[in-house]
Image (cartoon, rainbow, N blue to C red):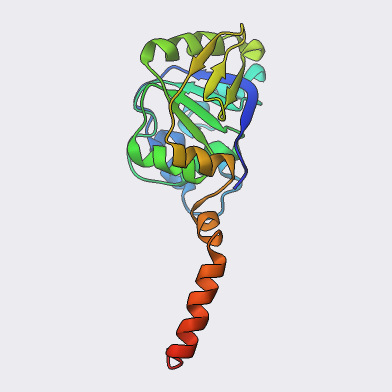
Length: 200
């Protein structure tokens, strides 16, 4: 998993509440277990009409095509549990989502896939949403070590994060990475078991 320490990039506004995982990545794109190529289905129903023609969706607008941060409404990532949702966002280059609240499973899945979800009070999200609506000038810096967001005008917002999750993101540790940190103990246990229980 790629480390997350400090991210500077364009923030895209998505002023919608209750964006569920089916809206993030519709069910027809869940046939793969690969994490690449999913950006094609990201927000598909918001991006295309029934005939496959492009709508004027924010992430397809020139100013936001390289957005790294998404500023969204409350209860982001609600609905069914699907890890494809953070995979699709990550495949599109989104490394941080700022909202006033998140659905629990989606929130946890973000951390496991190298995305930083930041929950802030609604008034602070509104300010960052205003910043994000500046187009290509909506450059925001998210400093995980300092737990601070710096807006285009230099305004700063502090955010809270669980220390363990912060440690994992800053060191690029997913569940497998955490297990591999204990590889000597795992190997020692397996060697001991082979000696003491060779029939297994």
